[in-house]
Amino acid sequence: MDNKTIAGIFDEIANILEIKGENRFKILAYSKAARIIEELGQDLADIYKKNPADLEKLPGIGKDLAQKIAELINTGSCAYHKQLLKGFPMGLLAMLKIRTMGPKKVKLFYNQLGIDSLPKLRQAAEEGKLQNLPRMGKKSEEEILRALDEIEKYSSRMPLVEALNIAPAIVDYMKKCESVKRVEYAGSARRKKETVGDIDILATGSSADKIIKFFIDYQEVANVIAHGDTKSSVILNTGVQVDLRVVPEKSFGAAFHYFTGSKDHNVALRQRAIDMGMKVNEYGLFKGKKQVAGKTESELYKALGLVYIPPELRENHGEIEAAEKKQLPHLVEMEDIKGDLHLHTNASDGSHPLEKVFKAYKKAGFKYIAITDHSPSVRVAGGMDSDGFKKQWKEIEKHNDENFRVLKGTECDILADGSLDLPDSLLKEMDIVIASVHSRFGMDEKEMTERVIKAIKNPLVNILGHPSARLIGQREPIALSFKKVFETAAKNKVALEINSQPSRMDLQDIYCKTAKEMGCVFAINNDMHLLDEMDNLQLGVSIARRGWLGKRDIVNTWSVEKLLEFFA
Ligand SMILES: [Zn+2]
Ligand SMILES: [Zn+2]
Image 1 (cartoon, rainbow, N blue to C red):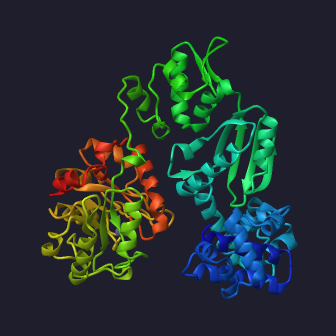
Image 2: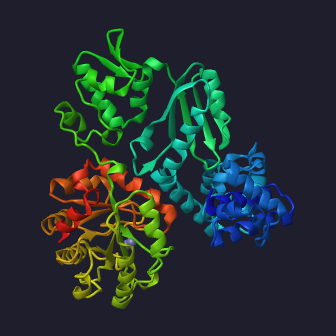
Image 3: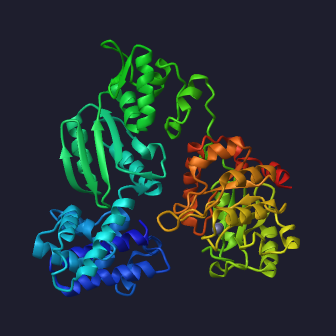
C-alpha cells in the first residue's frame, strides 16, 4: 500500500470522527499524520520493511498510528477504519469528496437538514435551503451546485488504471473461495476502456450461496447494497460499486460475453444469431430450445461463424466483419515490448538516478531503453542544456552492453513556432529524439497544426510525444488536425507515441486505427518519472490493442538494430 492511500484513509478517519463529533485531539492527530505521510519523501512500506520500530519515530506518528500503518501495509485495511465505516452513511462520505465541502459543512447539513446523500444535497441547494445556514450564503450554495455538476460529469466513471487495481484483486480473492470453480472480471474493465463504470465479476461453482457470502466478506467492502440468490452488489471503501453474478457452468461463456459488452457489439451479434436462425443471450446460444453453445466464448463465436474476438475490439467497429473473414489483426501483447523509449531520470524531473532506472529495466527483462530527459525550455521540469546532455552521455556509455542498450535521447520541447530548443548539432548525436508540446496549449487548430508539423518534419525527430497533450480531467487536447499530422508523420518516419501515463493515455485508442491505415508506426512509452510507474506500460498496450495495433506497428517491439535503422 502506498503513502497516498494510507494518508487518504487517515484523512477519512479524521473526517468521520469530526462528523461524529468526537474528541478534537484525536481528529487532529489523524489529519496531521495524513499531511506528514503525504509529504514524506520515503515510502512507509520501505521504512516498515527495514525496521518496523522506525515508524514510531516519524514526526506525528506515535505508537498507535504506527500500529495502524503496519496493519494497513500488512492486510490492506485497518480494523478501526472499517469499524468507523460500519453503519456510517455512505452518502456523507460522497459529500466529503465535493471540492468546496469539508467535514464541518457535511456535519452542518446532516444535523440541520438531515442531508445524507448527493441527491438530497442537490435538492436542498436547488430549493435555496442551504444559504440560510450559519457560515453559508448564496455564493457558497451556488458553488456547491457547480461542484455537484462537475462530479456528475467526471466521477461516475473511474480511470482504467484504478479499475485494473481493483478488479484483478477481487478475482484473486474470489479464487480462494473453495466453492468457486471459475471467476473473471468482465465489463469495460475487461475491454480496457479509458474509463470504467462499475466492476462486473462473474463466477461459477458448486454453491452460489457460499460464493456470495465469501464475496461480501471481502475486506474492502464498505456496504452491501443488494443481496440475492445469484447476484450481489457492494460498494467498496473507495466508493466503487462491484456486482457479482454467479452463473451456471454451461452458461459461463455466454454470460462472460454478455457482461463484457460492449452493448453495440452485443446488439450486432444478437442480430447475427437471429439471421442464422438462432438466439443468443447471457444463458447461451440457442436453436429453438436447444443450447448449441455458451460454455466458453470461443465456442459461442465459432457457432456464429466467427473467430474469437479479443475483448478490446468489441465495439462494433468492424470487428465482426473482420472476424468472419478471419482478418482480425494479431494484437500486440505486453510480452512483445522490448524497450521503453521515453524515460526521465533525476537529471531532469524524474525521481531516480540513471543507474537505478537502467537496473530496474534490465532486471524486468527489457532489451533496451532510451533516456529522454527534458530540454532547456521546460524549466519547471529541470530541462537540461547541451552540456548537461553531454555529461549524461558519458554515464550512458558506461552502462551500455551487448545484452542491454541504453540509448541517448531527449524529450525535446516544441517551441511556439515549431522549432526545437536544442541545436541540431546536439540532436544529431542522439539515438532517440522525442518532440513534445509542453506550452502554449491554447493555439487555434491551424497554428497548432503548423507548429507540430514543422517539428516532425525536422529529420532529426523520431517520435511525436503525447500527441494531443491532454491531461485527463485537467486539460483538454490541443486543437490539431490529426489527419495532417498523421500524414506528415508517416511520410517522415516519425512514430506516434502512445503515452502510458494514466493522466495522459495519449494518443487515444480512437485515433490509432486511422493513423495505422495512413501508414503510421507507434511507440508505446511509459514516460516514467518514478519506478513505481513501470507497470503503467500495460495501459499503453491496452490503448494499442483497442486501436487494432499489432506487434509490427509498434517500433519498440522491434530489435534495437531494426529500430535504429528505421530512425536513421
Ligand atoms: Zn512530455
Ligand atoms: Zn516525458
